[in-house]
Amino acid sequence: EGGKKKKKKKKTKEEGYSADVDAAHEHINVEQLSKKEELFQIRFIVHKARKLVGAIQVPLVRIHLDTKVLRTKPKKGKNPRWNETVTFSLTKSEVELITTPIEIKVIDSAKDTQYGLIGQYKCDLSIAWVGKGKNLFYKWFALINPDEPQDGVTGYVNISIQIIPPGEAAKDLPKMRDEEVDVSDNVFFPPGIELQPGTFIVRLLNGEDVPQMDSAMFEGFKKLVQTSEDPPAELVDPYCKIEFAGTQIESSVRYCTFDPIWNEQLMIPGEFPSMAEQIVVKLYDNDDYAIDDLIATKLIRLSDISYSASDAVLGFSPTFGPAYLPFYGSTREFNDVYDKFADLNYGVKEGIAYRGRVLLEINTKMETQLEAGENPISPIPEQETDVIMANLQRHKYHLFASFCQGNMICEKENQVEFEVSIGDYGNKFSPFASPAPSTTQPCNAVYDGNEYHFMPWGRTKPTVILHSQWEDVQYRVESLNTLIWMRDFMKMKMEQYEVLLRAFAHDYELEVKFENNLQELLSALTTLPLEPPDEDTCTDLDINLHKIRMFIIGLWDKDDFQPRKKGKKGRAAKKKKQPRTDPAEVIIDIDGSEAHAPTTTISSSSSSSSSSSSSSSYDTTVTGK
Image (cartoon, rainbow, N blue to C red; front, top):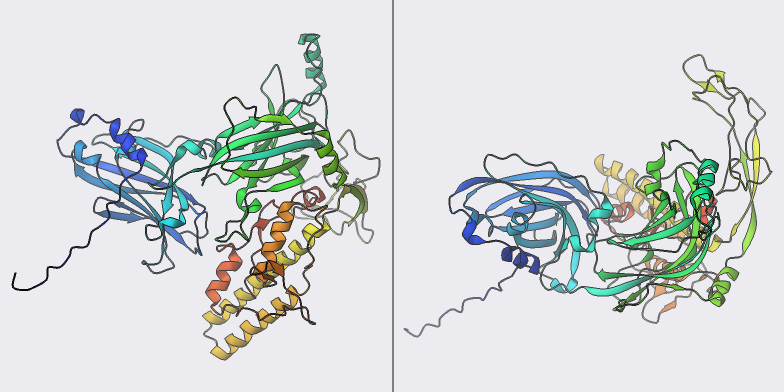
């Protein structure tokens, strides 16, 4: 009326809940709920987050319940752990309580609130109401960014929810292992996320140096009780168990051998995206008349054997090997009574001794699943195994070790000797140990006059020379060692740069310091081995890692998918990208919060260097161009 145009109201999109919330409401009989208002306590125990996407510095969890908001303390990294409890008090009836909305948000506290949102999940209290005792323990919530839903899952957060009625006390959280929590059925996905089927194909070839697990007395007992049809079982009967997101598969048992040969292909189905971040490989000793003994456990992180990128040139699915996977755990010496280091065999903590290795290969096939009735275990043709073993020829290596000092020793009466070993080479307790000496001369420690003892070596230092045979993996560890040194070097330089910032140094001094650091880094880049690895001896993971490192350093052009030609001084012939000038951004990348490349590890044992380059703890991120 009056010639005025009516303003159109903006239509707001109603965001529904996931199917898990709808299923929870179906299990609730509303007629049996009380309509009387009471005071309830709602506890949220925020345990940890995983696979957070983006350049993250210090994330925190913010929980919105009805009109109230609480948050945790900020933690560093992409996989932070909080283990914090936030408690709400609500005065509502049971009918109103189950429909109370919940918003779980993970936010980067170092950024502006508008741009710091990593992801969120929306639901209501019905998901906890239908749980045992109105509790929801150790549940994973998949996060999405509502502004960019096409990006898919941006991370996972693990939370427990407890609804405490008036007059009742909160129950203690049950103790659960990571294997019990990290299962595919323990995840709430937001609406619109479609899970893609996939299959891990694990080709298990052989094993080496498996330690003794049965005593001679127990071996004689086995011979008495077993029938003539049973296979002989002595010392150790190894088999492998592969686990991923609650799904597991076992290989066949190889009886009476320290060096088993399986030559089997195992298929493990899964759904992606998955909150599980690792493939678990367990080595067992089969016991027909007792509980199987766990020999050792190896965790393969998916982030170390895959790379998620927005373009198809750099990204690749999980792949590994064929390469040897070393196992570490408790000491190799067999104990009939009690092994006080047995907990190290579960892979939770770093092992203290080498416990064998397994040759395997992992590939991923997306959009494929096992058909009904299909056997997930199949033999590998002998022709294929012969080709793999031909490319893993061994070479002789010699290790020289000289002992300079030995102090703060607690031993007072018995003689002390030091042993050097690589894998099973040099282990004097091994039944296959070589006669070559791998220990120092036994001698008594001398009292230092205070509390400890020291070795009286004086000017004559004991030496050990150890001979061993391993696969040649120089191409794999050479560039990796250089990148590790560059990472440590840049971290040290940026710490010095931070000291100048705190001291309010002049801008010119800061600029000169920063440019000098970048020049030293560029000079180190020219020493990297830029030649692609030999396709006959390297794995697909080696090729993909080489491609990613070349691109990050600036020597790879994605447009023509060819390496750039180097100039006379060893630098890229094309124009380089401008290096980052914000110190905070560089420090973030060096700390590993913004991972542009997979991570890798070199263990102190030579056996790990002969394994894949995917064992993880060192970040190979390089940001200077």
